[in-house]
Amino acid sequence: MKYLIIFTFLFFSMDCLANDKYMEKLAGVWKIHSADGKEVPAEFYMQLKEDGTAETWPVSKCWGEEKTSKGKYRATKKEFIVVMEKGEDIASKYKLKGNKLLIKARVDTVYIRDENPPNPGELKNPTDSSDCNKREK
Image 1 (cartoon, rainbow, N blue to C red):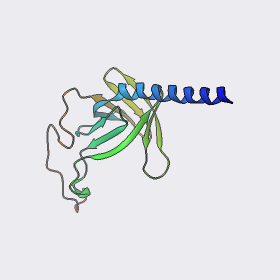
Image 2: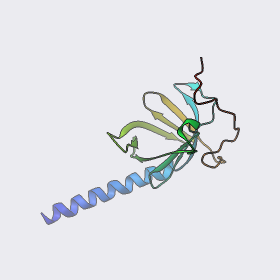
Image 3: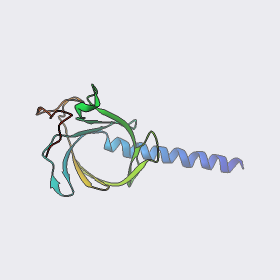
């Protein structure tokens, strides 16, 4: 029994270390490049930190004063997992190759690592967004 407890502890410790290794590789600011093979001209950023926290921006002005959306994630060798506050976590396959990150979910999204990103909540090329009450036709 004693050896089983030690083995279980070591197994889970090594799994956590492995996850940290992948999260370290993903840490940084990523700018959206394409979705399902089509270039995305809009600025959209995702900042992933080694501690599992994440921020995305811009967010809708309709959400209030917040300039970023905050959340949590985990990563394993093959899965990028969005940690949900309520409900089940969302796991997607991903591939990291150089400065490109492909997340394969309902939409295959490619992000490019941005070595000179704007501060969270800011954009390099700000534009005036539409009024919350208007719907584009």
